[in-house]
Amino acid sequence: MVASPPESPTPAAADAAGPTGTGTGTTESGDYLARRSLRTGTAGWVLLAGLGVSYVISGDYSGWNFGLAEGGFGGLLIATVVIAGMYLAMVLGMAEMSSALPAAGGGYTFARRALGPWGGFATGTAILLEYAIAPAAIATFIGAYVQSLGLFGITDGWWVYLAAYAVFIGIHLAGVGEALKLMFVITAIAVIGLIVFAVAAVGLFDAANLTDIAPTDAAGASSFLPFGYLGIWSAVPFAIWFFLAVEGVPLAAEEAAEPARNVPRGIIAAMGVLLVSAATVLLLVPGAGGAAAMSASGNPLVEALGGSAVATVVNYIGLAGLIASFFSIIYAYSRQLFALSRAGYLPRSLSVTNHRKAPMLALVVPGLIGFALSLTGQGAMLLNMAVFGAAVSYVLMMISHIVLRVREPGMPRPYRTPGGVVTTGFALVVAVFAVVATFLVDSTAALWCLGVFAAFMAYFGLYSRRHLVAHSPDEEFAALAAAESELTER
Image (cartoon, rainbow, N blue to C red; front, side, top):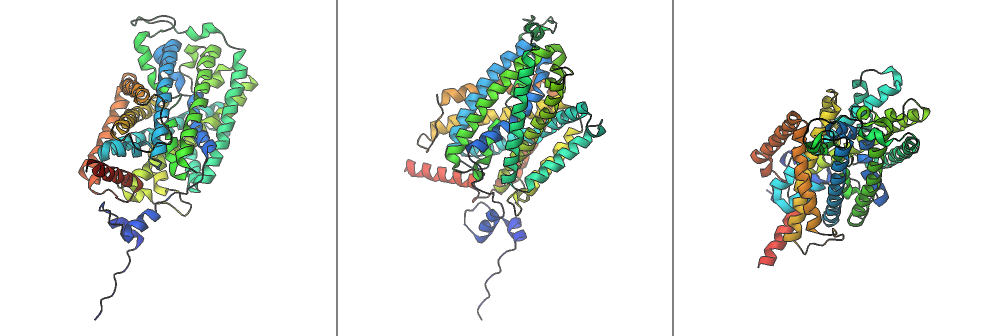
C-alpha cells in the first residue's frame, strides 16, 4: 500500500513550529514569511524625508524646553549644538548602512550584521524602548495642548491619551500607504505652524529674556550658565528631544521604492529641516517668553506668544505637530517590533500582518503599554526614559558602522559616510555621554529602563536565541556575511 503524502501544516501549526533556524527552506518557512510581509514600493525619498521630520516635529513644540530648567539657555544651547553635531554624524553613518542593508529592522539589522545576535537584539531592544515610550510622553504634551484650548471641555488628559492611541493605531491598521501620506500632510501643517510662530515671535524677542534665570552657586554658574557646567550635561537629554527618532527612517526600507537610494536621501533631507527648526525655536521661544517662564511650560510656543490671536493659531497647529510625531512613532515601534518578532527574537505572533500588510499585534501591544505609561502624566520623566533607550541604541549603531567599515570594507555601499569612522566615532563618544546624562536628570527612571532592558536580554539568553528564524531577511544578511567570510579565508 502506498503511503499518503503528509498534509500541509495549517498556518497556526506553521507559526507554532516555525522555521527553527536550520535554513532548510521548507514550506513552513515560506508560509511563515508570507504571513509576515510588508507592502513594498510605497514611499519615495520625499515621503521618507517627511517621515523623518514627522518623527521629530513634536520635539519643537514641547519637551525640549524642560532643558532650560536643567542648564538655562546657555547650557541648553551648548548641549544642543553638540547633540546636533552627533545626530548629523549619526545620520550620515546610518545613511551608509541603510543603503547597504535595506531591511525593516533599521538599526537592529545593522547591529545584527556587525555585532552578531546579541548585539543585534540589544540594539533592537533599545530602539523598541525608545519608540514605545516616546509616544506616551508626546501623549501628555497633546493633553496639555488640548486642555489649553478648552476643546470638548476636557480637563483630564487620559481621555485624550486613549483617543490618540485608538484613532492613530486604527489608521495604521488600514495600511502603510494611507498612513504615510496622512503623516506627510500633518507634518507639512506643523512646519507651517513653526513658520507662523517664528514670524510672530521675532517682534517679541528680547535678548534679556534668554538669561532671566537667576544663577545658582554651582561651579561655573553665570547668567548664561545659571546651573554651571554640569547643567550643560544635564540639558543633553532635552537637546536630544529636538532630533529624537529621526534615525527611524531606515525602518521604512522594505516599504520604500529603491531603498538603497531613497532611504539615505530621505534621512539626510529630514535632518537638514530639523537643524533649522531646532535653531529657530531654541532662540525665539525663551527670547520671546523668557527662559524662566518657558522652563516648565507644557505648550511653550503658545505661552511665548501670550494671549494673542496668533497664539491660538499656533496652539491648534502645534497640536497637529504633536499628532504628527505621535502618529509616526507608532509606525516606527510597530516596524521595529515586527522585525524582531519575524526573526524570532521576540514572540513570532507579534509579526503577523493583516490583509492590508500592517502588523496588527506589533501596533496594538506597545500601544497598550504606552497608554498605561501616559497615565502617569509625567511628560519630562517619560521623555528621559525614551532618551535612555535612544542613546543606548546610538552607541551600538555607531559601533556597528565602525565594525562594518573595518571588518567588511568590500561590502557594497551605494552611499558612503563622509569622514568614515571618524564621523561615526564622534557620534559614538557623544552618545556615551548622553546615556550617562539620563541618570543625571532622573536616575530612578533611567534605572527602570535599564531593568527592562536587562529583562529583555535575559529572555534572549534563556530562550529566543535558540529559536531564531533563518529565513528572515536580517538572519539571511548575517548568514551571507558568514559565508562570504569563509570563502575569503579559504
